[in-house]
Length: 64
Image (tube, rainbow, N blue to C red; front, side, top):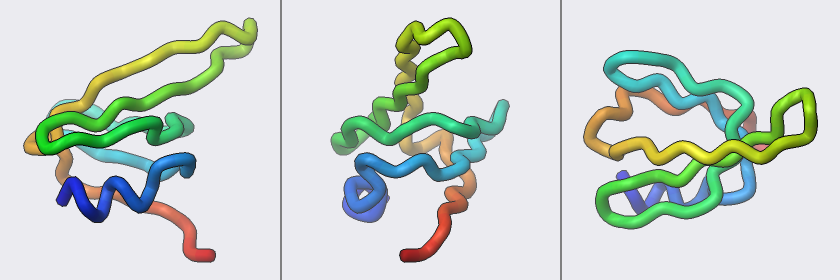
């Protein structure tokens, strides 16, 4: 799945994991085990999150 997720770098898909959904996070980087996500909150502060690829259940994104 990491190859497919690498194609989403720079996009903001909805990623649903085993415990939660992740919406409005930009995919920043992907390796064999992790996806690095970034978002900017209402105050303009950057937040980052690491999501294990094995915990991802679905990924939704718009087409080109």
